[in-house]
Amino acid sequence: MDNKNQNTNQNTKETPRVNTKENSDKMRTKIKETWSGLSDTDIKLYDTKRADFFAKVKEKHGVSKEDAQKKLQQIEKDCGCSSSTKAA
Image (cartoon, rainbow, N blue to C red; front, side):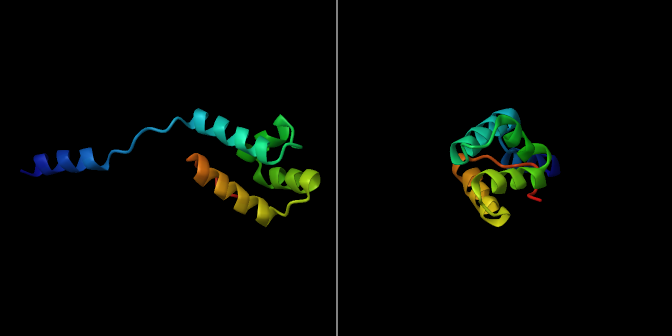
């Protein structure tokens, strides 16, 4: 009886696999659409060095880190993307 319940629970708790590369590409595209002045190198900082990414957004678009974070959260929500790293 316990095995049957465990199997049922396992089936209901399964989550669909997310294509991380696809989400990352989608997120980079949305960032480029939002802040077109950023280079591809600048945008790659989003995944590796968030503080540097926000510095580039501020430098090239005059957007504060806080406003950029809010915008990125909205972009993630809209495109169904989720970053694996929390904002700096």
